[in-house]
Image (tube, rainbow, N blue to C red):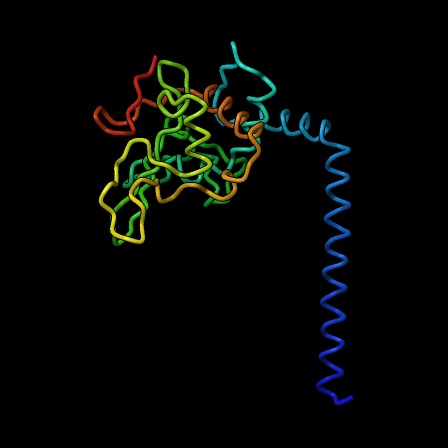
Length: 217
């Protein structure tokens, strides 16, 4: 056996060992997750309420789902909370600005999940939408859960704001969505996110007919 053949054999063996070990670890973690699922959910619910940056209205809502949704959706804030372009640090409350090393982080409730983040591309500017509930109490300006799930799973733009994008872009989609993390969530977790979004304060946003506008109670 040549040195090259020997090294190739060793490499293949090492790769197989990594795959087997990975499979064992994944299987073990899945088993542990299944056994502790109830405890994990309760822990996430409590943590969700602890980290919620705005007062939550849980009247008439499933409180457990609200807490769980708060824990799950922390990634939404990065795209759907945006202060005025000339005052970006208004996104955070003084004393809680993470970029200045201030802890704990404190999101400004005046802009929380109200949309307005601009994604500039050569083919147009795409603005993140207002996720807060309107006077109906439903998230994203009155979207029923069926439409919310459809958006999260497919990225469809039900407002049809960008119909003329050139190929290979599909103007019927939001372009930024579907975000893979949320697209692959279970229906239960998406329901929790929806329930949470129905519990946060309404952000009126810009005046109508802006797609970011909400008619607040």
